[in-house]
Length: 128
Image (tube, rainbow, N blue to C red; front, side, top):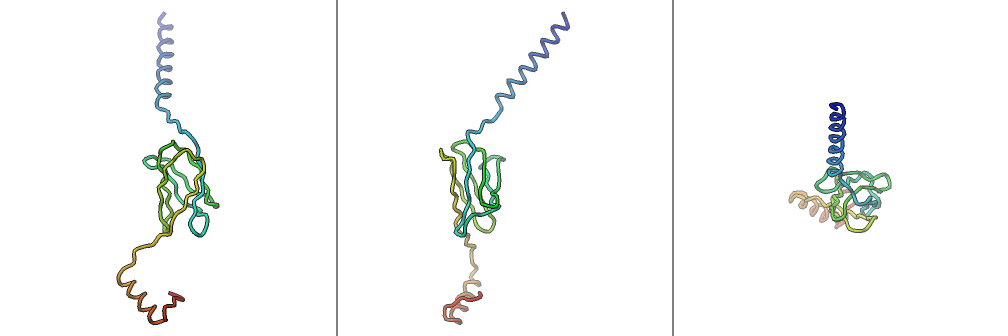
Protein backbone atom coordinates (compact mmCIF):
# COMPACT_ATOMS: atom_id res chain seq x y z
CA UNK A 1 0.00 0.00 0.00
CA UNK A 2 2.84 2.40 0.87
CA UNK A 3 4.52 1.59 -2.43
CA UNK A 4 1.37 2.55 -4.35
CA UNK A 5 1.13 5.84 -2.41
CA UNK A 6 4.77 6.66 -3.20
CA UNK A 7 4.32 5.87 -6.88
CA UNK A 8 1.14 7.96 -6.99
CA UNK A 9 2.91 10.84 -5.23
CA UNK A 10 5.82 10.76 -7.68
CA UNK A 11 3.41 10.64 -10.62
CA UNK A 12 1.45 13.67 -9.32
CA UNK A 13 4.66 15.59 -8.63
CA UNK A 14 5.87 14.90 -12.17
CA UNK A 15 2.50 16.00 -13.61
CA UNK A 16 2.62 19.24 -11.57
CA UNK A 17 6.11 20.03 -12.82
CA UNK A 18 5.01 19.45 -16.42
CA UNK A 19 2.01 21.79 -15.98
CA UNK A 20 4.19 24.56 -14.53
CA UNK A 21 6.74 24.28 -17.34
CA UNK A 22 3.99 24.51 -19.96
CA UNK A 23 2.62 27.72 -18.43
CA UNK A 24 6.00 29.47 -18.43
CA UNK A 25 6.92 28.53 -21.99
CA UNK A 26 7.26 31.56 -24.26
CA UNK A 27 5.65 31.24 -27.66
CA UNK A 28 6.92 33.45 -30.49
CA UNK A 29 4.43 34.21 -33.19
CA UNK A 30 6.66 34.18 -36.23
CA UNK A 31 10.11 34.24 -37.75
CA UNK A 32 10.87 37.43 -39.64
CA UNK A 33 13.52 37.88 -42.29
CA UNK A 34 15.03 41.02 -43.69
CA UNK A 35 17.96 42.89 -45.12
CA UNK A 36 19.83 45.85 -43.62
CA UNK A 37 21.18 48.45 -46.06
CA UNK A 38 22.66 51.91 -46.25
CA UNK A 39 23.19 54.08 -49.33
CA UNK A 40 26.12 51.90 -50.45
CA UNK A 41 24.25 48.58 -50.25
CA UNK A 42 23.84 45.69 -47.79
CA UNK A 43 25.54 45.97 -44.38
CA UNK A 44 27.22 42.75 -43.18
CA UNK A 45 27.62 42.47 -39.40
CA UNK A 46 24.84 44.84 -38.32
CA UNK A 47 23.36 44.01 -34.91
CA UNK A 48 19.62 43.32 -34.61
CA UNK A 49 17.97 42.84 -31.21
CA UNK A 50 14.44 42.82 -29.83
CA UNK A 51 14.01 45.73 -27.42
CA UNK A 52 13.72 44.62 -23.79
CA UNK A 53 14.74 40.99 -24.42
CA UNK A 54 17.87 38.90 -24.83
CA UNK A 55 16.97 37.85 -28.39
CA UNK A 56 19.48 39.15 -30.91
CA UNK A 57 21.28 38.30 -34.12
CA UNK A 58 23.54 39.89 -36.70
CA UNK A 59 23.40 40.16 -40.47
CA UNK A 60 25.32 37.79 -42.73
CA UNK A 61 27.65 38.80 -45.60
CA UNK A 62 24.67 39.78 -47.75
CA UNK A 63 23.09 41.95 -45.02
CA UNK A 64 20.32 39.39 -44.40
CA UNK A 65 18.98 38.25 -41.02
CA UNK A 66 16.35 35.99 -39.41
CA UNK A 67 14.82 36.41 -35.93
CA UNK A 68 11.92 35.04 -33.87
CA UNK A 69 9.56 37.81 -32.72
CA UNK A 70 6.07 38.58 -31.47
CA UNK A 71 3.90 41.07 -33.29
CA UNK A 72 4.13 44.52 -31.68
CA UNK A 73 7.73 44.18 -30.46
CA UNK A 74 10.41 46.67 -31.49
CA UNK A 75 13.61 45.78 -33.37
CA UNK A 76 16.76 47.76 -32.67
CA UNK A 77 19.11 47.75 -35.67
CA UNK A 78 22.62 49.09 -35.04
CA UNK A 79 25.87 49.29 -36.94
CA UNK A 80 28.90 51.01 -35.35
CA UNK A 81 29.95 54.15 -37.16
CA UNK A 82 26.81 54.33 -39.29
CA UNK A 83 23.84 54.69 -36.94
CA UNK A 84 20.82 52.89 -35.60
CA UNK A 85 17.11 52.47 -36.35
CA UNK A 86 14.06 51.24 -34.39
CA UNK A 87 11.48 49.20 -36.31
CA UNK A 88 8.05 48.19 -35.00
CA UNK A 89 7.03 44.62 -35.91
CA UNK A 90 3.72 44.39 -37.74
CA UNK A 91 2.16 41.68 -39.90
CA UNK A 92 4.98 41.69 -42.50
CA UNK A 93 7.39 38.76 -42.70
CA UNK A 94 10.20 40.54 -44.61
CA UNK A 95 11.74 43.90 -43.71
CA UNK A 96 13.93 46.15 -45.86
CA UNK A 97 15.72 48.25 -43.23
CA UNK A 98 17.57 51.36 -44.37
CA UNK A 99 20.10 52.92 -42.00
CA UNK A 100 20.74 56.60 -42.78
CA UNK A 101 24.28 57.97 -42.88
CA UNK A 102 25.84 58.84 -39.57
CA UNK A 103 27.05 62.42 -39.30
CA UNK A 104 29.25 62.87 -36.25
CA UNK A 105 29.20 66.27 -34.58
CA UNK A 106 31.98 68.57 -35.78
CA UNK A 107 33.82 70.83 -33.35
CA UNK A 108 34.16 74.58 -33.92
CA UNK A 109 37.87 74.14 -34.52
CA UNK A 110 37.23 71.53 -37.25
CA UNK A 111 34.63 73.77 -38.96
CA UNK A 112 37.08 76.68 -38.92
CA UNK A 113 39.80 74.49 -40.47
CA UNK A 114 37.39 73.30 -43.17
CA UNK A 115 36.38 76.90 -44.05
CA UNK A 116 40.05 77.98 -44.26
CA UNK A 117 40.89 75.03 -46.47
CA UNK A 118 37.94 75.78 -48.79
CA UNK A 119 38.89 79.48 -49.09
CA UNK A 120 42.51 78.60 -49.74
CA UNK A 121 41.71 76.05 -52.48
CA UNK A 122 38.83 77.86 -54.16
CA UNK A 123 36.08 75.65 -52.70
CA UNK A 124 37.62 72.37 -53.88
CA UNK A 125 38.11 69.54 -51.39
CA UNK A 126 40.59 67.10 -52.89
CA UNK A 127 42.33 65.37 -50.05
CA UNK A 128 40.89 66.76 -46.92
